[in-house]
Image 1 (cartoon, one colour):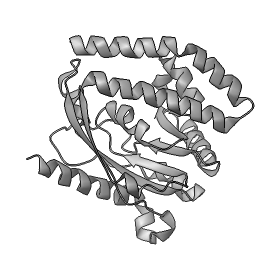
Image 2: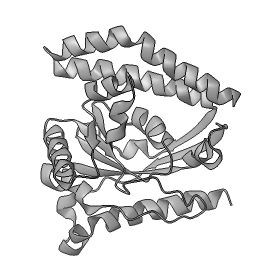
Image 3: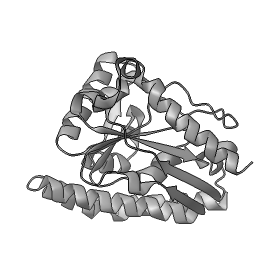
Length: 247
């Protein structure tokens, strides 16, 4: 519980002490969107990395050389812990926005940074609002902003299984309609930080592997029809392979 308290204090101090930077970023964004994106990304990435340190996370990152440096991407990951975002976001290139659940808007100060980062908030109770989020994400991709999304829709709590929850095909319209490449990202071990033993935080080894980017235009009709299953299958295979290393 001591580690949880330390992390909570770290996050609280980060959000309070960076309030002037929130204002500065908002003002900069009125005149220079790219400069504002760089500032917001740098600040939030630094904040997440302090959380890594205080949590005692030992990170093994694989395949970053496969990630295209000059294209907006749809980062697609599996989801077993809130730490998938905490770890995954700083590994994405700038600018990147996250598609998150609507309830994150209720978190004071953090919600402001998320808005400054152009994150989109998904209301799962409304199909219409969900479509609006997808359309906004498509617009961002066309402007050069990458998107990080977890198409399983919710955290997979079957921690001992190598299987993923079904990935929703609708999420992939962000790539198929914008022309963005799909960048698979496999997270292994994030649940061991806290989800397995809530609310305690424990040091853990986490592996993140970036796969080969996928061009939706190269897929055949059947693959496109079940694109969630296609990409999910790739991530699931990688997940099982990494887990096998530790068995």
